[in-house]
Length: 384
Image (tube, rainbow, N blue to C red; front, side):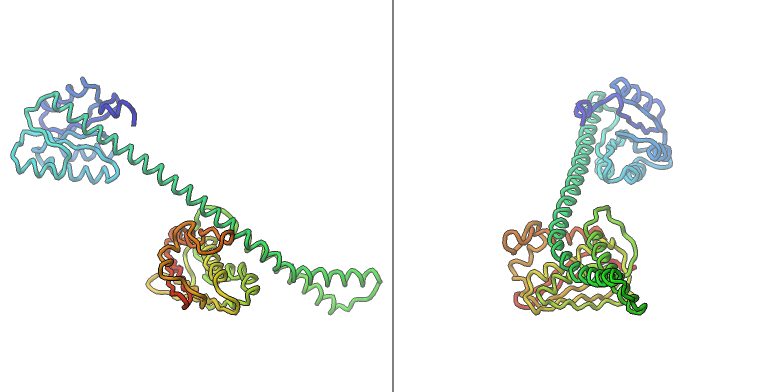
């Protein structure tokens, strides 16, 4: 807010005077122009409404008794046009002085001055209302800045959680590459050695070798693609896609980790189920949930991924038979940086970021658990 706005008066401040009495309107306009305000004049309620639809106004001086549309109705419609987040003061300036009229007027407008009025009092009240308008605009700017800072902080949290997960998956990807690369190296080396020795290679055998090399190469490519999609940054992109495609990508990112602990991941997603969300981010949320399950479940545990739909939403249900979450801890699971893992084993951002992701996808997340009886996480997104 500028110094001039704080003072309640600027040369650029526009005041709309609405009065069917031309002499009264002219007098008020001259008075306000002399105080440095820009003035526009309308002689009826409908004209005033058309004016504020097309041009901005900082304050309205409005007569009550006018033919056709009275000031009460005009004020009610103006407030709708201005909107809740744009405070444009309306001051009733009228010869009507009854107590009931004043009470009714103050329910619709922001101040009520009776004619004849004192010029200094009118200017003082106008400046007060303009100061209030300036403060409201300043608050809106502050709110906008705060929301932007929140968005930036949330993005930084999101990036930190993703980077932490990428580091965790790196060792798993290396292990995932080990078997296919061993096969590729083995079969290609065998072919190269036989060609060096000028040995004849049976066409069927050659086709078999090349087929294995091709399949294992595609397996490596798919692993890299899955990790790349998980790591990729970008704005939320809502689109329709098969839910199974998203679940499959998440499962592939954690299957090596599950295998190390001999944890079975059972997937049962209807092939025809389609959802409307950001595929990449929904997959990230699933990975965070699955990673939590794998971290807390012991060897030989089971994690199931299923889905159901109801009332326009699809629910992805990720359940495990692990140790569960104590009742005292359960309300805190979505708090950023809250974790029960040992130092260095987690940042406490996974479920907090899941909550953010599901909001961005117009969905929701819910966790239910009981100590000793496993944990169930439900991710809800709109169906396509």
